[in-house]
Image 1 (tube, rainbow, N blue to C red):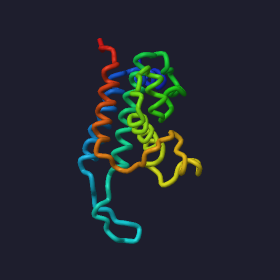
Image 2: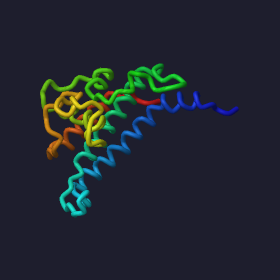
Image 3: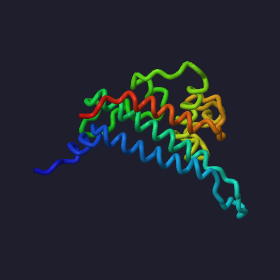
Image 4: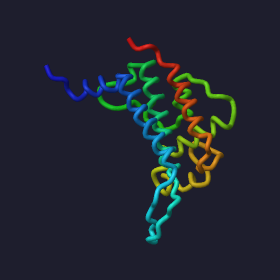
Length: 175
Protein backbone atom coordinates (compact mmCIF):
# COMPACT_ATOMS: atom_id res chain seq x y z
CA UNK A 1 0.00 0.00 0.00
CA UNK A 2 1.48 3.35 -1.00
CA UNK A 3 1.21 6.50 1.04
CA UNK A 4 -0.40 9.50 -0.66
CA UNK A 5 0.92 13.08 -0.53
CA UNK A 6 -1.54 14.16 2.15
CA UNK A 7 -0.60 11.27 4.43
CA UNK A 8 3.11 11.90 3.86
CA UNK A 9 2.62 15.61 4.56
CA UNK A 10 0.84 14.85 7.82
CA UNK A 11 3.38 12.21 8.82
CA UNK A 12 6.37 14.48 8.20
CA UNK A 13 4.64 17.48 9.77
CA UNK A 14 3.92 15.54 12.96
CA UNK A 15 7.46 14.18 13.24
CA UNK A 16 8.96 16.20 16.07
CA UNK A 17 12.30 14.59 15.23
CA UNK A 18 12.25 16.22 11.78
CA UNK A 19 11.47 19.67 13.23
CA UNK A 20 14.30 19.28 15.74
CA UNK A 21 16.70 17.93 13.10
CA UNK A 22 16.05 20.84 10.72
CA UNK A 23 16.49 23.30 13.59
CA UNK A 24 19.83 21.67 14.49
CA UNK A 25 21.00 22.00 10.88
CA UNK A 26 20.15 25.70 10.98
CA UNK A 27 21.90 26.05 14.36
CA UNK A 28 25.06 24.46 12.97
CA UNK A 29 24.94 26.68 9.87
CA UNK A 30 24.41 29.78 12.05
CA UNK A 31 27.46 28.85 14.09
CA UNK A 32 29.63 28.43 10.99
CA UNK A 33 28.45 31.74 9.52
CA UNK A 34 28.85 33.50 12.88
CA UNK A 35 32.40 32.22 13.24
CA UNK A 36 33.23 33.17 9.64
CA UNK A 37 32.53 36.79 10.56
CA UNK A 38 33.77 38.43 7.34
CA UNK A 39 34.12 37.60 3.67
CA UNK A 40 35.40 39.30 0.55
CA UNK A 41 32.52 40.78 -1.41
CA UNK A 42 32.51 42.40 -4.82
CA UNK A 43 30.48 45.59 -4.49
CA UNK A 44 28.13 46.84 -7.25
CA UNK A 45 30.76 49.43 -8.23
CA UNK A 46 33.31 46.63 -8.80
CA UNK A 47 35.42 47.33 -5.71
CA UNK A 48 36.27 44.53 -3.29
CA UNK A 49 35.05 44.90 0.30
CA UNK A 50 37.39 42.90 2.54
CA UNK A 51 35.31 43.41 5.67
CA UNK A 52 31.81 42.49 4.57
CA UNK A 53 30.23 41.05 7.68
CA UNK A 54 28.02 37.99 7.68
CA UNK A 55 25.90 39.17 10.57
CA UNK A 56 22.59 39.36 8.70
CA UNK A 57 22.91 35.82 7.32
CA UNK A 58 23.85 34.64 10.83
CA UNK A 59 20.75 36.39 12.21
CA UNK A 60 18.61 34.77 9.52
CA UNK A 61 19.89 31.31 10.41
CA UNK A 62 19.57 31.91 14.17
CA UNK A 63 16.01 33.15 13.77
CA UNK A 64 15.05 30.28 11.48
CA UNK A 65 16.57 27.75 13.89
CA UNK A 66 14.51 29.11 16.80
CA UNK A 67 11.40 29.38 14.62
CA UNK A 68 11.60 25.75 13.46
CA UNK A 69 12.35 24.48 16.98
CA UNK A 70 9.40 26.42 18.44
CA UNK A 71 7.10 25.14 15.71
CA UNK A 72 8.25 21.58 16.43
CA UNK A 73 7.44 22.07 20.10
CA UNK A 74 4.02 23.47 19.23
CA UNK A 75 3.38 20.45 17.00
CA UNK A 76 4.45 18.11 19.79
CA UNK A 77 2.02 19.79 22.18
CA UNK A 78 -0.79 19.94 19.57
CA UNK A 79 -0.38 17.12 17.03
CA UNK A 80 -3.81 17.85 15.55
CA UNK A 81 -2.49 21.16 14.17
CA UNK A 82 -1.04 19.39 11.14
CA UNK A 83 -3.71 18.21 8.78
CA UNK A 84 -3.13 16.55 5.47
CA UNK A 85 -3.18 19.59 3.20
CA UNK A 86 -1.30 22.67 4.42
CA UNK A 87 0.56 24.25 7.28
CA UNK A 88 -1.91 25.77 9.74
CA UNK A 89 -2.12 29.54 10.19
CA UNK A 90 -0.76 29.17 13.75
CA UNK A 91 2.51 27.90 12.29
CA UNK A 92 2.83 30.32 9.37
CA UNK A 93 4.22 33.25 11.36
CA UNK A 94 7.82 34.41 11.61
CA UNK A 95 7.14 36.19 14.91
CA UNK A 96 9.29 34.48 17.50
CA UNK A 97 7.49 36.41 20.21
CA UNK A 98 4.16 34.88 19.13
CA UNK A 99 5.68 31.42 18.76
CA UNK A 100 7.14 31.59 22.29
CA UNK A 101 3.67 32.57 23.49
CA UNK A 102 1.99 29.75 21.50
CA UNK A 103 4.53 27.28 22.92
CA UNK A 104 3.75 28.56 26.46
CA UNK A 105 7.36 29.56 27.11
CA UNK A 106 7.81 32.67 29.19
CA UNK A 107 10.44 35.11 28.07
CA UNK A 108 12.51 37.04 30.54
CA UNK A 109 10.88 40.30 31.44
CA UNK A 110 13.64 42.46 30.04
CA UNK A 111 14.13 44.45 26.90
CA UNK A 112 17.37 42.66 26.04
CA UNK A 113 15.74 39.28 25.36
CA UNK A 114 12.63 40.76 23.77
CA UNK A 115 14.62 43.02 21.47
CA UNK A 116 16.83 40.12 20.46
CA UNK A 117 13.93 37.88 19.42
CA UNK A 118 12.22 40.78 17.68
CA UNK A 119 15.47 41.51 15.83
CA UNK A 120 15.65 37.86 14.73
CA UNK A 121 11.99 37.93 13.66
CA UNK A 122 12.69 40.98 11.50
CA UNK A 123 15.77 39.24 10.09
CA UNK A 124 13.76 36.16 9.08
CA UNK A 125 10.91 38.20 7.68
CA UNK A 126 12.96 40.55 5.51
CA UNK A 127 16.02 42.36 6.91
CA UNK A 128 18.46 39.51 6.26
CA UNK A 129 16.92 38.56 2.91
CA UNK A 130 15.79 41.69 1.08
CA UNK A 131 16.88 45.33 0.81
CA UNK A 132 13.30 46.47 1.54
CA UNK A 133 10.35 45.15 3.57
CA UNK A 134 6.91 44.27 2.22
CA UNK A 135 5.59 47.71 3.31
CA UNK A 136 7.49 51.01 3.30
CA UNK A 137 6.45 51.94 6.84
CA UNK A 138 8.37 48.91 8.15
CA UNK A 139 11.63 50.65 7.25
CA UNK A 140 11.27 53.08 10.13
CA UNK A 141 8.92 51.05 12.29
CA UNK A 142 9.77 47.35 12.09
CA UNK A 143 6.81 44.98 12.13
CA UNK A 144 8.14 43.17 15.18
CA UNK A 145 9.06 46.42 16.97
CA UNK A 146 12.72 45.74 17.57
CA UNK A 147 14.23 48.87 19.03
CA UNK A 148 17.78 47.64 18.60
CA UNK A 149 19.75 47.96 15.40
CA UNK A 150 20.58 44.98 13.23
CA UNK A 151 24.32 45.41 13.79
CA UNK A 152 26.47 42.67 15.27
CA UNK A 153 26.46 42.33 19.02
CA UNK A 154 29.07 39.92 20.35
CA UNK A 155 26.57 38.60 22.92
CA UNK A 156 24.00 37.57 20.31
CA UNK A 157 25.22 34.02 19.72
CA UNK A 158 25.15 33.37 23.48
CA UNK A 159 21.63 34.83 23.62
CA UNK A 160 20.67 32.53 20.76
CA UNK A 161 22.10 29.41 22.48
CA UNK A 162 20.34 30.32 25.74
CA UNK A 163 16.98 30.62 23.96
CA UNK A 164 17.52 27.28 22.14
CA UNK A 165 18.28 25.59 25.46
CA UNK A 166 15.13 27.10 26.96
CA UNK A 167 13.02 25.73 24.10
CA UNK A 168 14.72 22.32 24.07
CA UNK A 169 14.03 21.88 27.80
CA UNK A 170 10.28 22.08 27.10
CA UNK A 171 10.13 19.06 24.78
CA UNK A 172 8.50 15.96 26.22
CA UNK A 173 10.64 12.84 26.14
CA UNK A 174 10.14 11.01 22.89
CA UNK A 175 9.08 7.40 23.20
